[in-house]
Structures are given as C-alpha cells and as structure tokens.
Length: 358
Image 1 (cartoon, one colour):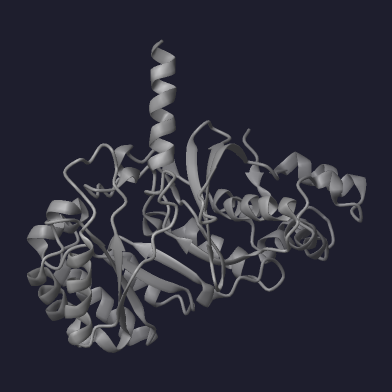
Image 2: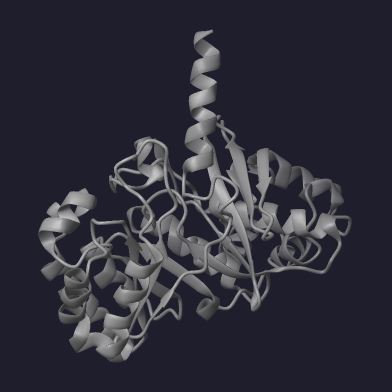
C-alpha cells in the first residue's frame, strides 16, 4: 500500500494522528521542527524521537516521494527542476530569484485539461491531481537544494502557477497553503503566496470565503469571449461576463487586489483595440486591479504563436496606464532554458516515448 507523504499533514492533523496512535501530541512539534526547521531528509535523523516512534512514522508515512530527474539553470539564476513522482509521472518546479527574495513556482496536477492553445502544459492531458504532500515536497526539495549550496538562501515566496489548474485541485491546494504558511514550519507569509486560476468561477466564490491573505491571479489573456474562447477553451464553459461577476464578488468580499494575467501573442491579442477592450472590461475594478503583461515564451508545438513585438507591448501598456489601469510587463526569466510552463516535461516525455519505440 502506498504510504502517505508526511508533508501532506498540517500541524494539527499530525497532532491528531499521534494521539490516535497512543503517542503524546507534542511529538508533532518535534517532527515539524525536524522537517521544516532542521530540514532532515529521513526519519532516522530525528534523533530526539524514540525508536518505536520513528518506526511508527516509517510504517505509515513517506518522507521522499519526489526524485530529481534533471535540472536546468539559466544564466539569470532561474532553476527548473524536473521531478519524478513515485508512480513514474513527471512534474516541473521552478525557482526564480528576484531582488525581494526567492520564489518557487509549484505544480498542482500531472498534466492539464484546461486546454489553453498556447501553453505547453496542455500538450499532455491531466493524469491526476497531486496530493498536498507532493506539492509541499516541491518546496522542500528546492529548499534542500538551496541548503546544499550553503549560502543561507531560503524560499520566501510561492506562486501556484505550474502545470495544472490549482482550483481544480482545491482541497489539496488549501491544505498546502496551511502547511507552508504555518508559523511552526516554513512560515511563508500568506501575502507572499499567489495562486493563479484560469477562471474556475465556482471556486473563485469559494476562495473569497476562505479568509486568507493569499493573493489571487486570474489568467485572462483576452478581453472578449470570442477571442478568449479561441485561445482558452475553458472560456466556453466559464465566459468572461460570469467570470467578472465572480471577480466582483471576490473584491467586495476581501477588499484585496486581484491580478489579471495577460500573455501577449503577436497579432492575436496585442492590438490597440484589444487594450481598449481590456480597459472597458475592468475599469470599474481598477482600484483593486493590476494587469500583468507577459511576453510569450514560444513553444515548438505552437508555431502559430509568436512573442509580441516590443512596440506592440509598449503601446498596449501605454493604453492601460493612460486609462488608469495599473499594469506592468513581466521581466523574462529563464529565456535560455525550457522556460515555458510544461516545456521541459513535455520534451522529456517525448524523448521517453521515442526511446521506448527504438
């Protein structure tokens, strides 16, 4: 029987588990200290636990469910990790370095069913959801890599923007937030965590009720239904007008700023009229809105899409700013490696298939 990842339990859940096993609840404090403060990689290293307690943990939990398959490092310091899960599936995790700290982008699903026509993640359909433990361990494995470098660097920010739709794996995502945000462990502040959704309307309403400080980003990528349905098939079931109603509810309920992500595709969604349509779409929310303009990372399989020209990006930006819409152009990172989300994974799986045929 497959063992559950120890990283998937919140502190309270681990306390409850220990008491159910006839152990003292304070064992949870000891284990969390070893996992998240001392950051050991095996139960045997938890030297202040009795042997029977260590055996109990080994019998019921796994501490290593991700194996490093390969890693790419960009000249700008970005690192892309390809991990193999215990069932053989591959996932990606990315470490990005900024002036304000080190941010890790995590994956929440094996594959993706959202079907964005420009995204490498959608080249392979969803196989399954990741468990909360598998999501947490992405953070831990990156942190272990930093620890090995011995430079005192730590994960300070998290973006849930990797392969998959986080709101389609809602329960495990929320458990992940509770683990990494806990003051007893990694203590990554909720305001330093951002989750991105393609626009799963029902879950946006639910997320508004969570009373969390976690930031919300919505992948918009087009200002009207016709164009958005063309580049994001999710829009056919979750149309813009309904999505905006959910956004309004979120803003009213939380009074927290929301980010609209907008990948600029040359000649597709980057024209001045598209910028003006975007202004009209969100002008009544501009007090609590920010538009993140994202240069496109080309994907070999999607030759129809190219990165917008610098002039088009600047014109788009100027139109938004002149109309009072706060926005910025995302700085490109990892451009000399497989930067696009899901690209490294899809290339490796293609190599594996070709090797199996030969």
